[in-house]
Length: 253
Image 1 (tube, one colour):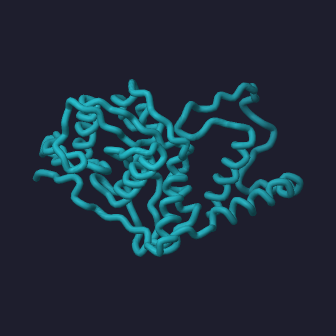
Image 2: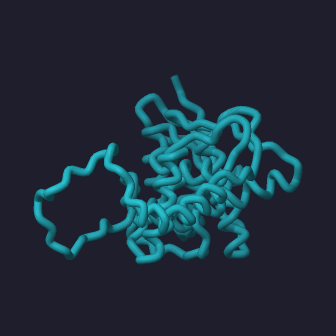
Image 3: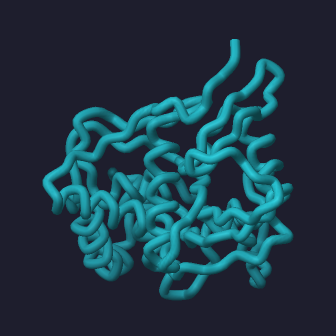
């Protein structure tokens, strides 16, 4: 939790000076600093009382925010290779929230394992739990993807046995997608499909480069906020936070 608070506090202070978000272009410092300093800084370095006096109120505020319990999970929700409970959970949230934000049904939801940095623990789920799961400032966007691009997406998915919200398919032994169904209907390469996804992945992250030519539609919603809000809604409805593997990907042996 100390590491989380430090990272959270860092982001809070970073927001004040408008530094770039994670997974986007790296900040390029302009100041030229010497390669060495006269004082070696280590974890054992004593805290400066004046600095601590300034930081302490912010640290306490962040701790209170991160410790807020927003839901309860009977079992931990984890990711793994192939279809996983955590990827299903988050992809479903993106698809649902994007539909609400844009006022239209969304065909597919996409979340790669690389974008999920921690599991949701069994027991109490806090704001900090969601922050650890999704520490990036990525926005939920929607792509209007033509059939050939959607085919490329399923080609990618089949190689790693990745599940998508709103679809099922079979992965052959050599990693090819067959029997693709979207919304229960056979995939139609001649039509355009809507895809809920993070702006990072839409920009080609995690090697999804085939999405880069498509201009995304913005929702104004952070992916982390969508997850946080969904868990709060479950709790308000008296429901636990649960997810499971549902057979969205059938793997031929």
